[in-house]
Image 1 (cartoon, rainbow, N blue to C red):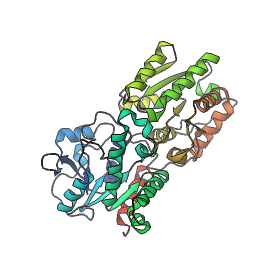
Image 2: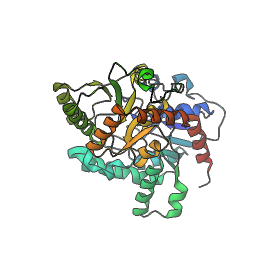
Image 3: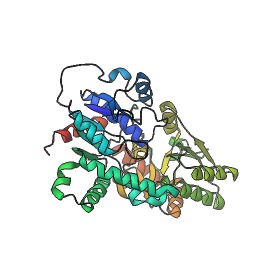
Image 4: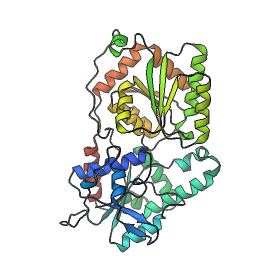
Length: 391
């Protein structure tokens, strides 16, 4: 099976899609699917082999070791005629999906891809002055994957949006039904064992969790960009600080994809809010922050899946997040305080509740103790079965 790694092998951050590229590769390897990595050669307009440096970069953040890839000749495997694309191929500096399709046909390959979201089409206001260009390229991307052989949506909400889009541009129900399948991503945090259950009750919560003489620790893992809705979080924290002694400390983790959000964060620091930001961290530091955190908050308006929510749940840490769309699919399984993240006042109410009501926190912990988590091995098995499903 050929596995497309063109952007991830050089991108300096480990955002949600990059995590998926690494995790799905490892998951397929773990179920004995041999993977041969490929990149795009802009000169030949065709696929080519990555360098060792590319594979070493891909191995960061718990990605596959360079030796795990199938780089040499070997016995044939039934997946040999498949090209798998987990990355988002959209933008002026990437190949068109027509070129990807033509190259795959030339090499005798069928294409299976993971579809992450249709957010630029649904929320163009989050993409600044260049939103028309973003919408244009994402529309081409969503049209282009209709020429692939299999498309695996990462959540039921994402699947519904893509299905409606394909109907609108003229594809039949039977064609879309044979093309599109829903395979939700795993809720397992790659490379980290799940912590043991936390046994607490509302009566002994503060002592057991160590809150008695310190502020609550709240973690937010999200890139600095408008859709992640940091501005509403800053507003909620500012309001709470103005009306009460905000007994909490916040750590934000994410790369600064939008300078306006970064500037707003810097203003919050000048007025003394209890917020710290870490731009780029490795797996060890992320693990340490989840151990530090008492709860997480994810104010994002819209996601294709919501990996930070899943990672919080994997670590048995309650999460304040949206109750709608793909995030709502994750939240309804337990352990989440569901909010209307489009309204900063809802963030205020959620923070007040989690900071002042031990019963609420204890209930969320109980839900996490009872919750069954979806593993990457589950995803890989479903993915393989999806490839085998008749068209």
